[in-house]
Amino acid sequence: MKKITALFTALALMLCPLTLVGCGDDGKTTVRLCEVTHSIFYAPLYIAINNGYFADENINLKLSNGGGADKVMTAVISGSADIGLMGPEATIYCHVEGQRNYPVIFGQLTACDGSFLVGRRPEPDFDWSNLAGKHVLAGRPGGVPAMTLQWVLNQHGVNTNTPLFDTSVAFDAMVGTFDTDKSIDYTTMFEPTASEYVALGKGYIVASVGEASGEVPYTAFSAQKSWLKSNNKTAKAFLRAVLRGYQYMVNNTPETVAKSLVKSFPGTTEQSAVYAINSYLAINAWSTTPVMSETAFNRLQDIMENAGTLKSRADYNLAVNNNIANELVKELEM
Image (tube, rainbow, N blue to C red; front, side, top):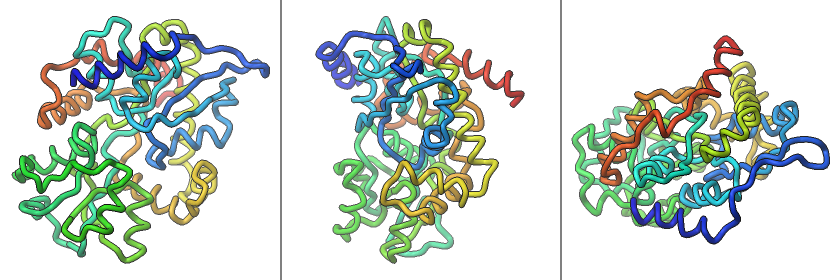
């Protein structure tokens, strides 16, 4: 945890100082959003972009891909990004280390783990205890996908303190490694990769990690405390656009939603997007409101403690600022 925080600080010092959002030539307010990865799991965000909801809020959104929560947090701390979309664990680490101008979570996007457990054979009577003694490719150590899977397995009595719980492969290499290394019995995949893998006859989806773990604030929007104070109206407009993206998803058929969503994913077919949307709706993957509950926040810290990455707890009242989210919920009578 200290190494992660030291990396945030060191990289931030090498980057530009904190800046505020500015107005472009078109009169819109520019907001720089850095996402942890580009995934259909964050569908409400892309729907908001493609349907023009940010433009409606007078926001010119500049989207970049950080390629990892540590890099996204570095961008937020340095001021090269105004808002970071990442797992709340990165914000928790900063709070535990006592940063003064600390990042704050101001809106939640996803409400559970979005990965699905893929095995080599169908298991209609699947139980998590089936993974005892099996080679499981879990993701990078300290990452929320690996920590959540570890939590689920431990809750079902499966020992993960063994090399068979494999955290040696980077996230973006997991599918390829599982495909070629037949000694691996299970791995996790996000949609639409999981459904596409099954369609090729290479494996079987046997369980949902998110369904097993329950509500976890898996992905959220964070910004520096000082940025939120100076840009409260912009942050509220930003969340309103994202919330409209979610409402569009639940008020239209997956087929209709897919037509808008695939604009952000060249090479992904509408049918694959429909599979992904249906899979995520079935497990209530997306937050119905941007308000992050203390119960969910503490469950994430339980998961982190279980994985041995958290030595002390962050204060929910300091790490999470629901003021903007609560205002939106009240305005929209949700």
